[in-house]
Length: 208
Image (cartoon, rainbow, N blue to C red; front, side):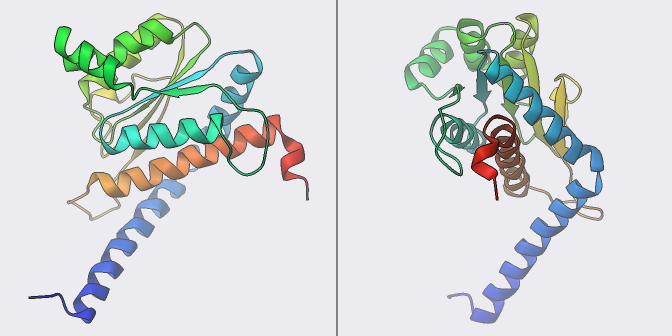
């Protein structure tokens, strides 16, 4: 039987309210906003120095990684030169490494192949327990890269493993907390990092 309009509106209200509460809890920790400024400024400096960003994640997180990369290599707000960012989405690499070595190595070998000292790895995991992301962070640190993690819930195994991290926690009193609400805040963080980068490198694009 189809859901009644009133019932649907109630579902929408509940979902949007949880999204609002999740964002409010994130913003209440002022260090989260300060960290966006710090990471964005660091990334701008690395781009100016000739370094690049590598981004990895699984499922919805790899879609966010692609989105972040294309905003840098393509266009965000206004025209400017492209910035070097690569998301790990190559099907040949992923299936080769998963088949020959194991799925937990797909990102680490990619970092080993493409990462250099001074580059930045941005790692996305809503659970914080993705073994392949954990291995990528370890490889990046071994290569002298700066590591940035966007995590969820309570951070999982990745908590404390990166140089900079955000953990999107459930609002107070919420016991059932899923990846969709976490990914919404992850994308906001990534978009805001890009704006910080652009304002540092291309201030003329934001002149009033």
